[in-house]
Length: 406
Image 1 (spheres, rainbow, N blue to C red):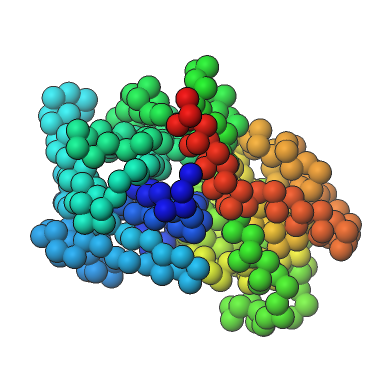
Image 2 (image 1 turned 90 degrees about the vertical axis):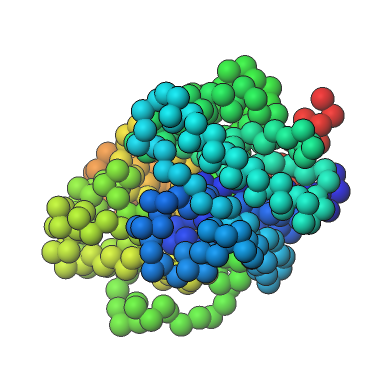
């Protein structure tokens, strides 16, 4: 496959949003080997009212309303890609299934397709791949008489039935996408087993880590992040990720704080303030919730941690989760203590403390601190080297070549 091949990447996220997940990491890696065009999730009329005053929205308002300057060229320092902002869409998720929903959603599909066709013409795309990143409701497959992709790819990152927003119209849409798509990628073993229908074009494609970026921070002598400068020699137990009652076991977190009062428990990520009040997290003296931090600063925070945590609930939502931070923790050589929330964790049992209950989780934290050594750190780092975004993109290239050959 030529490195000059074009990739149109339509995401459920937007460029520069506060918590984009793995889509941007994958996109950046793709852009090292492909000419990438990142089509953002379109803004709806409702979004304009809710996000009015938001800086990102202000940047894009002329493109959204009048299709003026809809392209942003992004230089990552090692590669570049183009962000494409589609026109304004109609909010449709509140509508019941039926002709009105189909009519308005068809219009939204048309808006995004028109934006993609304009991009194809402007940048003279030829043999391009269309990659839909878990947005089955809008344009899961790109079909055009004059601009036909060589492959349609659909990436399943979550169980759509566990999403209150997407499940209403998305479950049926995803089944249609699976039937029509040339290549299907699935990011967790649970989703793969749930979705697999003896389709040879479906493949396990989990999250990974930008190993080079994390390694650079790990081997450097850096001062601590400004908001952890004054903790002295206090050991830190850290979680990085989405802080929510649907993901995290807050009772387990409380137990960690109570059983290790001599340590500081630090949570980094987007959070719901209502959770803090409901679960009285703001009243725990050795718990600090720092909120969201830029992706570029995350390795320097993880570097401070004595033990990293994945205190996920063992529920239907999380059994299909493959945490982005897992390989990032390992790339920094840090001990990881996790609940046994997902089948994917079994592959990491040699380097991750996977706990079956609260007592096991608490004992594992103590054990992780006592056992930590350079030898164990090296083992963790070695595992991370086998789970990099570079390896995922190489896997993708192989799957594309194989699919095209068939």
